[in-house]
Length: 189
View 1 (cartoon, helix red, strand yellow):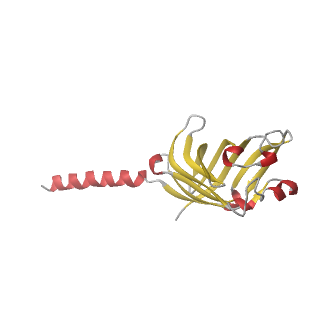
View 2 (cartoon, helix red, strand yellow):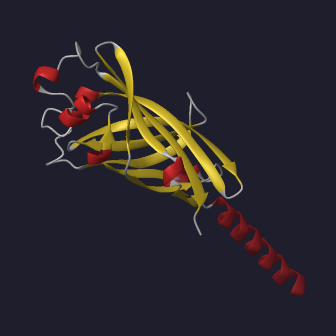
């Protein structure tokens, strides 16, 4: 009888431990070591920009992709497009329309093994009130209690109403914009 009880307890503990190990780990962003940026083209020349203020909710484990997530809320008004002329235009209705749409968000529906990179986040990007499904291929490296996440994906700016009116064509500002995610993270307590 004792051996049967010990066996049942042992099997239960193994199941509990394997479930506990499969949970996705919560990660906090190290803001001053992280970047949410973009690469765009104006008049044939590439330029880089970034969003200085954003918040993330990240849970990730290679062993628990079904529980993993990468959600981000972006303060669009914190954009820096690399020069004052662009920065002065971006709040306007033709571009990001800060007054009406001060935030953007990316909410994952799934994270899976990827084709272009080791992993892919599938999610909905909401920008200027427009929702589009976006796949973000990314790499993940863990080193003790720290991790890094790097990913890139390309969007068509007009899919989100970015660049309207005289800016709707791509003769000055090209349609494709590459989104660059480069995050340093610490394991949450």
